[in-house]
Length: 105
Length: 382
Image (tube, rainbow over all chains, first blue to last red; front, side):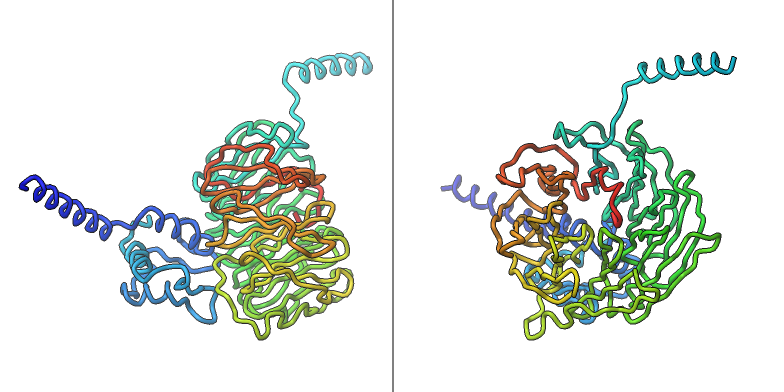
């Protein structure tokens, strides 16, 4: 019984720490998406191409919510497409965090 | 006496040639490894890589052109780097940083000048192909796209923001510029036909393309397929199509639609629409096999694991397959028997027979993107 409880507790802990790790770090697939696929317009180093510079200094005027919305809904009349059809709101938020946090050096 | 010198010199030269191994570059090519800033030197006949050439900077969206003798490649990197790569010595022969953010380049028909188009600062810079010294700077005040070489030592390029095409004639000390306005909203890329006559820009800001007949004294914009997507829902464009590789199939051009999952067929003479083919996703490249019998199409994220092959006689998709994650580019061998495909996220270049569609080889590469064979050296617009 105790063993079972301990196992459950351990599993819960493991799940919590996994979730925490997820919150702290953009998963590799999303980073790859940003670098490679956003990079096809913004440049692989994100310093801009046909699309503008999206490194932290250039995004200073955005908060997480606004930036997530831009990712999800795009910017009409520009080449920035809406990513909502292929990204979840949670993913868009992670991308916004990743861009603002400045791991994009 | 003179004759004796000649004989001695000839003897010495013969010895030198025998002493070093001869490198013939006619069946070689370069593959851009975009993440690691390197190039893979490849051999078409052996379906193998020969060497990795490193130190080329940021190669996202990099492209390159070849010198007429197929010995040197001029590589245009995203960081504004212009590199001259020696295929014989397998090394970077020279490298300059010419701007903050380059997007592509071209080489003049005589091989003497290399032009680079820049996003930041907007414009075109022209360099001596031998020394990489700048010989002309043409600011445009706009992001510059669709830079190609045109016969008669000219370059043609287009302004994304201003919707203008400029023709720069480099036959005198100062470049002579012809500006053509009214090309349309947000031209995103352009091609020039192999005969150097037609320059066609694709438009992102409106449905349609614009052509110029460069054989005219004063070329006027010709609207092609105006409003081709009218009445259809616009789909998001996750990657801009490319027009490079002028997909001319027999008498027709095949062009990727923007915001619609189809390729468009246009009569090469009249520029009138001759058909459409529905495709798997947003086309990025629609490339005709050199004989024009097939068109191979790859697609934008998230449908970029697939290639479709269209038969140009029936305009039907005759083959569809999934080489792997993130198919970025395709390059045919000069006579079209095989096609090389870069599969970025598989870390592979895959080679297929274009008649049987069977895989004939594969090569390991770091995040491969553009594949460029040296045969491009002899084709206008490449």
